[in-house]
Image (tube, rainbow, N blue to C red; front, side, top):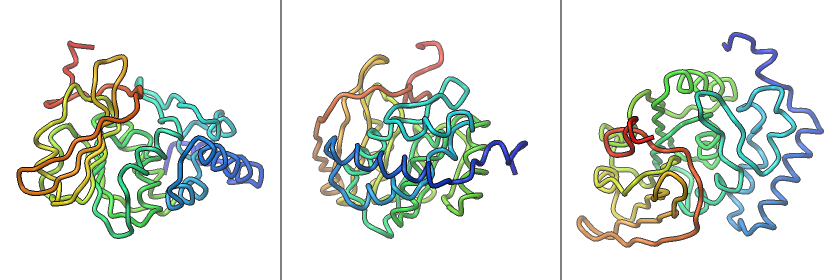
Length: 228
């Protein structure tokens, strides 16, 4: 368990459930249409993934700090990336950047088989504990996520939750045929969300979508520490 589980795990009160329902309404008004995504957001207690002092703020549509210079993504961003994946129960999904664990929980809630990699050990350990406590069972790994996780490929879907300077070929190669990769690509200030669909062994269809802001993906196929 966490060092102070009573403080970390705030009881899911009627008030917090109400705030969560309000968040779902906000996401719907902002254009999220995938009912599976909205249902998952309505069920996953986002307040469990932030410090207890931020429990009520967890249902504002904005990012929050989770330590080590990282953030839990804005709920709209999580919902939009999940929607772009076109998820179905039973799909095998690789997530690059576990972070708080909230996105992994959404994927698990949607019935996916989740594999997630986190570079920062403290976040890996904390997210693993929180996800286990909530009853979610993704397969988690500590290490550089930019090369992917070839041990379990191919994946039906791959989701990158950090900014990349380019689309790593290694991730594209780990996609199943008709698989989808969603990744924010750009510089350290602003990125464009990319949706890449693998149509055959060599053919990939690439779509450029909205602009977002993410923390950088650091690693072999991402940014280097000295570039930050």
